[in-house]
Length: 226
Image (tube, rainbow, N blue to C red; front, side):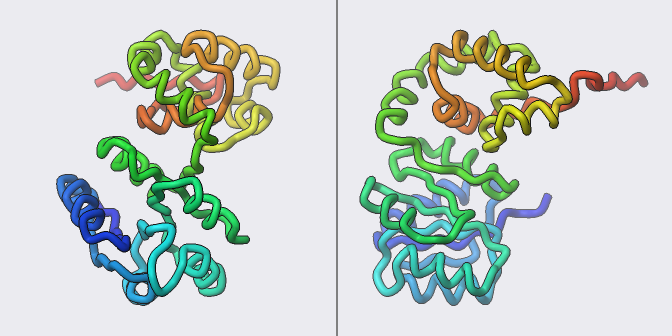
């Protein structure tokens, strides 16, 4: 299996060490370079073309928005993930006019970090939860794993597509079911998980790394016979 090649950059060496230890424990990640300054990180992205660059939101030398501006000009294939510790850092990066970058909070659990980076490598964009929704997500985290067991396969598929940022109409087209049916499914999902909005639902899906197969209503998965 091809490794996910990663460049990491943070102004604190202890954070670099922690990231190296967490990712180094998984065979599908390969750290190709690490830096405590922005300019070195930019050169590594240019020369090594990693799959993911994990960046501190406020590194010395070159700031997060400046790195995004360079990326927008040069259009590398690298996916950018800002590893942030505060609302100020997130707002600073989000002030940039470049799309396509993701956020992961520095207080996330190691297993969630790994799952999230795998999803970024697969093409998903991760955005920070608003403050109120962060609190709601933490409140739900203790019951979520058990609650997910009561979701149907179709509900888990819809949850996964919501986490990819698809609208009800786009989900309906993907699954070949009506917008009204999607709304009914979402209502049931919200009731079962005791949540009230799509943002928290998306965060739950990401944290659980839900891998439900997505197939149209008229095309159930085929059973292979030996």
